[in-house]
Structures are given as C-alpha cells and as structure tokens.
Image (tube, rainbow, N blue to C red):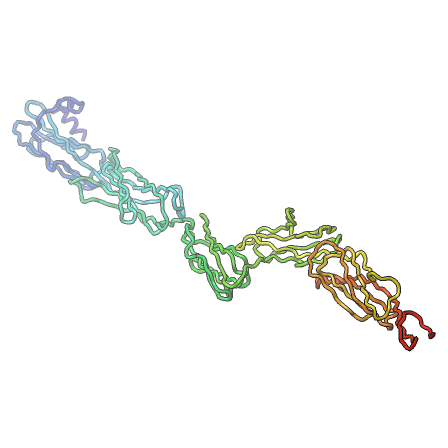
Length: 521
C-alpha cells in the first residue's frame, strides 16, 4: 500500500492537493458499477470503475484495503474478499494527460446484524402492580450501522412504539431502547417483545429482523367489587345462603363479620365464599359483611338477612337476669356477651358505667333502672334492662277493733283492722288473716307502688260464745317470687277477744234477754 501512495505522489501532485482539500476536476469521466453497495461484515466486494475518456494517463483505486496502482486501462476493479474495515471509503481516481486528477468516492455500507436482542424490566423483578409505571428495556448487542437500526415494540401483536437512531457511528455498538408501561388488571396474559431491524435501503438485502424473547409477567391488583352478595328475606325455620366473590390478584382471601350463631356455617371455595344458615331464627336477623382482601387492598359489602315470623334477638346475658334486693343492701350484676361484641357498658339513667359489672354498695334508690347496652357485629346496638325489685319489710303490723273497745257480745258484728306501716313494694304484699291457725282471708293488691306505703285491711267478724279468748292474727307477707328471699319475709300481729254471751230470763211469763250474768227474780 505504501508503494501505491509513493507512486501517486510521484505520478500526480494534484492528488495530494485533493487529499488536502484542494480543488478537483469539475467533471470526472468515471463510471462506477454498481453505484453503491451494502455489504455484510466479512463478505467479499467487487466494484468496477471505468472511463470513456481517451485523454488520460491512467486510473486506479484508493482504499485502505484492495487499492490499486495507476494503470493505463479504461477500467479497474476494486475487489476485497473479506471486507472488515468499518471506516473504509474507497475512491476511484483518473489522471489526465494534462496532469489534472479527479476521483469518485464509492459509497459502501458495511453492516452487521445484532448478536442478540433481549427484553427485561428495569429495576424490578416479580409481578407488577396495576396502575404502577414500569420501564422495559430492549438490549441490542453488537449491531452496525446504528443509523440504520429500527427498534419496534409489540404488545401482543400490536405495535406500540418504533424508535430510530441518528448516531452516525459506523462501527458495531451495543444499544438499548426503553418502553414505559402502566399495566392494567388482566394484562398478565399480555406479552411484550421487541424487534431489531436493519433498514439498509433499497440497495440493501431484505429486512433483517431479530426478535427478543417474549416477556410475560403477572399483574397484581387489589379487589375492586364484591359480587353476588345481596339482601335476603327468609321464613323462620327455612335455610338460606349468602355468596361472596371478588376479582383480585393474588386471589383474595375472604372473611365475614356477623353475629355468631351455632346454625351459621362458612365454606370458602375456589374464588369465593359461601355462608349458609340452617333453620333460621331471630338470632340470625342482622347484617352480614363479607371482606375480600389480598396484599394490595381490601373491599367489603354488607347484606341484611330478614327472617319472617321471628323477632330480633339481643344476645346480652345478665347474671343474674333479675334481682330482688332489700333496701339499703349491696348489689352486683354481671353483663356478658355471647359473642361478637364490639362495645359493652351499663347505664343507670344518664350515668354510664364502662364496665361489664354494675355494683352498688348500698342501694337507696327505689326506682333505679339499670340496663346493659352493647354493640354487636351484625346486630348493632341493643340493650337489656335489669329487672330489679327493691323491697322493705314493714316497720310495724298491728290489729285493732274499729269503733269498739272492751269485751264483745256474741252474735254482734265487729270490724278488725290490720295496719301495716312503711312497706314496699305494695303489689307484692299479701295480707293473711287467721283465727287461731285457721286461715280466714287472703288479700292482695293490684296497685303498683315501688316506694314504701302505709296500708290497712279489715276483717268483719261476728263472734260466738265459743270464741271467747280466741286469737285473731294479721300476717303481712312479701311474696317476691323465686328470686326473692325464701321463706317470704313476714310480720304478724295478733289480738285476743273476750266474748260475753246473751242469757234468757223468765219474767211475767215473758222472756227478756240481757247481757252479762243472770239471776232469777
């Protein structure tokens, strides 16, 4: 090659001027065939340079590979069996007899298809989350020329992006293209890929396309809606069921919020949950909330179950359920829940006791009305009053004879009165009359009075002579039911009577009756 350069220096000084940027012949009588050439790296190349001029000294090729010396011929061939010079710029030159020299550059494009094309997500691994932006990168290894490269992105079979490059470098380079995506639910079935194509123009070979592998990824998304669940109404004693399902990835897990009852069963199946109620009762009346959740979020929906022919149940349990307490005595009652309680407390009028136990050291309120209130899952707030009876035994019980004093006369009617002082409650009082041990009368009261009252009861008697010295008793008894004290609290008063008899007397053959002792006149 050095010999060729020296030869040109010797043969034509104008060539040096051209190489230095000097003027060239305006019309160079050179024809190249072909006019341009696209060559795969390492392939052979052959280009004919000819002239129709006769007024010249010779022609040749200037090239870093395959160059020729000046020859006195009318054509010369540039031939390279293995073209590997990425920057080669061959030129055919002609030296005329007047010493001027001209040349034509031959445009040759040396290309190389990529060694590999691959696609991958950047700064991420594993499933993608719906609504989050990710970047995919297509890596093209060892391709040339870069300005002829076209990268196409596909979502399934749909093209979504095309990218070209304007870098004029001719040597092989590694290059990448990126695609920003925001996946949506159900796109875990969508596949992404990229293709690298060398568009070498009409003179180049058929489009050389190399595709990456297909990128397939799962798209995670939170549950959005609860499906199927709706309100239902059922006859008492009949079965019913509630279905709950939701879309989500990962597949949602299901849970229920409701008032726990022994006839309620749960079964989670593929993609949903089934709640069944066997032989519905009032205990099943309420709301049933289905929750669907995965690692990204959760949703819920509420359905109400109504039972025809049944009343709602408040699952509060009072221990004891009713109380009988003596005025001034201590009292303590527990409020317990059966299940699913969210809040529980006691109230006595405006006072709130945030405890499950209501207790009083000395009960001095005749009309106290404590109640336990609670909020239950599926039922809401309900309450149960404590049935409480405050009682007081009488201060005194006494018997007297109304409008009479002294001995009684047989056959005469008298009225006994039993006075009971300061007793409560009146509706639980039984006044019992006895003559000796013989029951004479029982008196009860329909008037409701929680506070202590004074009460009197009367008994009409007509004593006989045999009743002389008899005892009449008045017994005040509080019948407070099975929860009250046993035996019943009682206070008794008695009175003994003296009975004077009537004797017949004969006077003037007439009978006169006098009281007291008698004598014959």
